[in-house]
Amino acid sequence: MSNPAILEVLQPGALTTVQDAGRIGWARYGVPPSGPLDAAAFAAANALVGNPPDAAALEITLTGPTLRVERECLIAVCGAAFDVWVGTLPVPLWHAVYVRAGRLITFGARRSGARAYLAISGGIALPPFLGSQATYLPGGFGGLDGRALRAGDRLPLGAAAVRDLAQRAGRVWPVERRPPYTSQPTLRVILGPQDDYFTAEGLATFLTGAYQLTPEADRMGARLRGPSITHRGPTGIVSDGVVAGSIQVPPDGQPIVMLADHQTTGGYPKIATVIRADLPLLAQCLPGDCVRFVAVNLAEAEVSALNIAVTGL
Amino acid sequence: MSEYPRVLPVGETAFTVEFGDAVDVALNRQVHALDAALRAQPVPGIVETAPTYRSLLVMYDPRVSSADAMRAVLLNALGTLTTSVLPEGRLVDISVHYGGAWGPDLADVAAHCGISAGAVIELHAQPIYTVAMLGFAPGFAYLLGLPEALATPRLATPRVRVPPGSVGIAGAQTGVYALETPGGWRIIGRTDLALFDPAREAPFALQAGDRVRFVPL
Figure (cartoon, chains in turn green, orange):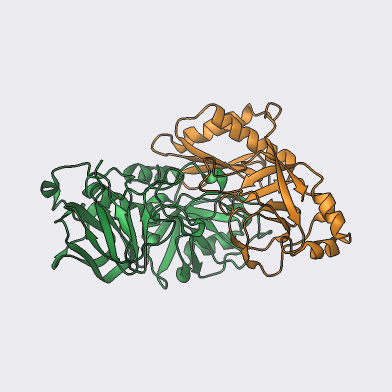
């Protein structure tokens, strides 16, 4: 086989990592799923360029990279609203964009949101670890040497699944299939599993209060600040399983929403779980943005799950 | 709190089956028995399961199984659950350098427990422990079976860095750090065994349900 084409990183941006659909099957060893925080934007980007849904792409956080690709390709950028250029041409988000060999892909100002996903036809083809290319920074594995990208990195690309690159260019991800991003999202939750650890007032506070995203928000979890949620009795539990979306409430009454790089077990009672369909809304929030929670039942959440591409499933 | 076992939704992609809210050998055995039963006869829709001290997290694909169907599967499995057929886990010997630079909190644990450092080592190396779960960070092993005489509270201020292989005590628990992470457990020793080695074919040295014996070096 000839050498793979390379995606070259000229400027890395603030925090750019390789992510695929996630590392599934290792929770029993304490390994979180990782993968994209905004699974909807990630899935749209891969679909636009003709990749399978679990192809590895770039998660771009707050400031974007400058990249050069050696071969002609399709790219799509979905999620946070960045200015993006291919060569000197501005290109739209949520579009399949044709890129000639050697052209620069440059990210500029970010208008809204926190994270964008850049998928490239053929996908990034690094050696998987535990079956996945998803970068898990705290464990130092996955992606490129388990770390964020740096200037000078060279990422091998896989063979494109589609040949008609130029013909596919210009395809648009329908507006109605994009998450309804806002800086004040209402996140749907299913109460529990430990909602009985909270007083009735505590539950009411949780479901009526506005919670601000603090600067302590990363790929592991988002700490929120708002009206204190009161526990009924014990403020701790014997360690129990955690998923992306689990909302832990430590003794201070301030909720923490666990995200893709979450620890797999936790000792704080979990008042509720954010449904998968709404995690992208949280993923695009910035410190200072305000979220609210609304309880839905399982049947309602199931309908949303059937309608979206769910990461890792 | 309601009666155990209870099957509780964790969003629309998982259930947790809680057997209680205690650190307890018999309870943890039930967790492992349900885990083994679900793995022996794979259930359509189940993506993975993760045992903890007192509950089994069952992650499923809601596009393959409805919540109602999954809940029914779990209740049915609970109805026929028996711990008597659960095979004994592998026995893994872990050599430990106790005290000194390897176990900076050994003297504090001894003082707290009102015994000598030597007695702490002797007591800690006596039981055959059970790996209750791996969690917190990749490969971190939570062990059941610490002698009551050794129970010691966590550090008031966690360390920023605990080296991998560190053997610690936190309350009635003992465990081994697999990665360098922050941590508040009282560190009494360290093993050279890499609990997590990405380069190894089986990257994790332990799994939930294994038995562990500490061998002082």
